[in-house]
Length: 526
Image 1 (tube, rainbow, N blue to C red):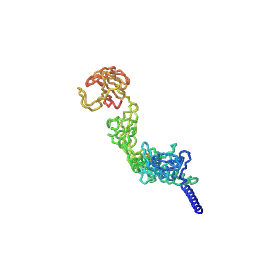
Image 2: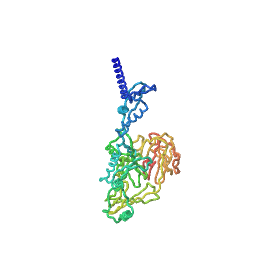
Image 3: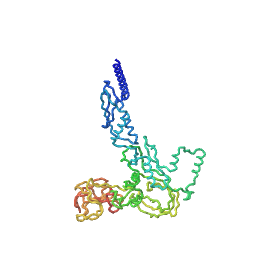
Image 4: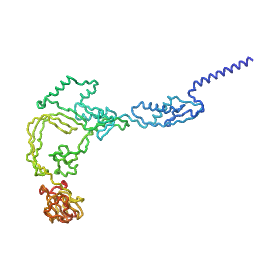
């Protein structure tokens, strides 16, 4: 009986030990086990970009976990990181299942994101100067590039570039200005005290009582650059860009400061000649002629207001500076005109030849890059007076000329040419020819009086019309004449039909303009 009792006692002890073991195991593993409760999916397997990130007991927090993983991955970069984030969640219903800690799942998500990065866009700055734009790494690089443009025209860096908000824009946009070193230092001081009261009055009074220019000697002036500015609109905005989209600073300096050829327009001024224009713009005259279809040679006529295309070497970013200069130079007096109301505006005669003078001056000069744009003489001492050129010129508007036919193909220009096959034709062509079928209407190029209408040797049938100012037009090789000598005609009036008479190799209209008996190129007057 005692043995049986002892046996039962050992069994009870064993049961108690097993119970404690179960309780212990529950304490250890219960947080990682999802009990079967007949409530649907209770274990969720997470995949990010096909990478196994672990198990969780609820899918409610998965989006928050991946958001935290994104932030952690991006935390090491100042830019914007583009990466795939293909999230898959596979749910299942289990009685017992092991789940992973939230920290482990997030760590796995971070690694999955890092393994699928496409590119990283880093902070950058886009700079737009007129039609040109470039991307630089930061605002410091922008200042370096802008300062390099300024330093081309100054030696001691008296002026510096500065970035500031553009007051003309509604949205925030940075632009660039130029300030003196003194202004830059003053702007950096947080406690700038403006002059007020008596001190302000004294300083103002002193500046106002400064010696006038007429009392100053040439040594009293403070020569040098007194202001600088950028000659193009500049816009600067923040951006996020790929590394290969960002230009290094040295390359940007080259692109912005090195002069490149750009087409610009020169407007002919009173007194201009082609040689003077070539000297002004520093471009050879033959190159100017080649760039403009309206110019044939150095004798081509130009008029005030004509626009000539010229190719000027200019940098992307222009710099405008105002400089006070002491100059000793030969100078020419302005041309003086005597107007004659009986002459046409194209008529002029030099009455007095000019002679250069010599003077010393103090000048306030405005430059765009290295080109002088404007000069104001502040003080002058003439050592030798200049003699002005005096020109008499007309005021009447000369008659205009129109093409004497509609259409037609220009077959022969004005001037020297290969000798034509037609007997009697000359190598020096005193007009222009338009090929056109016989019978084409011929119009009066300008109003006037018919002085010849009939046969004229190698010209065949012709019409000559006199116009005011010693001008005459001639129409030759006609098939039919529709006006008579002494008749007054108006511009555009029908006067004849084209033909193939006289020394002609085919149906066409020969047209001349003569001034005081001398043939000129008609194409310059039409």
